[in-house]
Length: 435
Image (cartoon, rainbow, N blue to C red; front, side, top):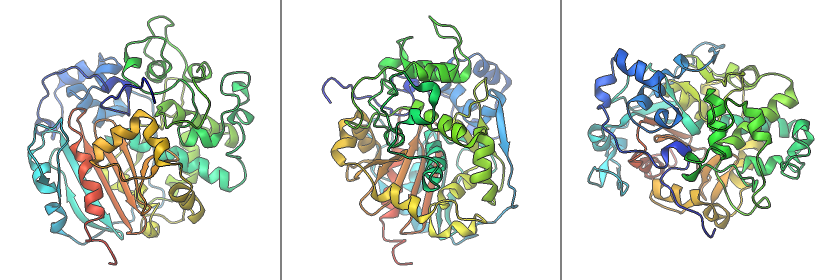
């Protein structure tokens, strides 16, 4: 759209204009962090927490030390993943992004060895781990999913739609009645799911500097950081004050605040807080290896847009809920065929996603714009039905239902997003076709 400024990150406003700084190699933090870094992180503002430097590395792994956190246990007990090593996965090559200091193309093995910011990479096929490496963290360590967590919110909303409790074509204010009389009137749940609301809530570089910007105020409210002109605000109040920019449906405009609207919607419809709701509907069915950590605002709202933590294998287990191998990690199917069909087939157009600045950003991250569009909090849907959701500092969740394949990875980098470049080539390599 005219006048839209392309930025290097679509996930959190603080990262878009990150200040150059010296970063400690992540290898030095594998066995723990020094006390001084903990003190530095505790003093950090939201820009520093998400900039991609040393405080970001600490916060990614230790978010529960800084925010109220709901703990969701593994209620069925561990359902172990199988093992069927495929070393050839590590030989798959990808070009590096233009911001990378690494010279490509590199194989996945080479990238994980040479990148100072790559922490872990896991590929699961038909319930078997076929590739798993932890170059800069330990397998049992917890890590933020960042925006790769957004489908947790859309999954619950889709369940409620399937049950007839939510009409996605009705105004969201039908359910969030305290939002009636605001600019949210006329915005549907479907618009919120696809980030097509036309509300002035988009994560952009400009929002980092403007204390009146709603996206900035959303993040400040989540952490209890005082706004320069308003002091400490509550997240729900900030969202209610969002102004309309244009009519819904014109362009994909990425906003973590929209995911939070889905959290509020689910809580209102079900009459229970998000962690309990998500546990009851989803996580209590999963045979995870560890607990799921859901981090909360000071007044108890789950920051499901990105502040969710687990180990890497349990991150993959969430992705497997969308595959035919769901029964290898869960005691009950939570992603129905109906929900999966809506995500993969009821998508908007390529022109719609490219009209927002994030379409071009995702094309740059992935090295191609051959996708159709975004869909229901997933960033990209390809013609073959594969799905991808990226997160700040280069976290990633790739699901190929037709290949029964899940790829997940953790990084700490806002400068080099090359870690995203491998998932699609792995899926389309032929290694997982008709097997």
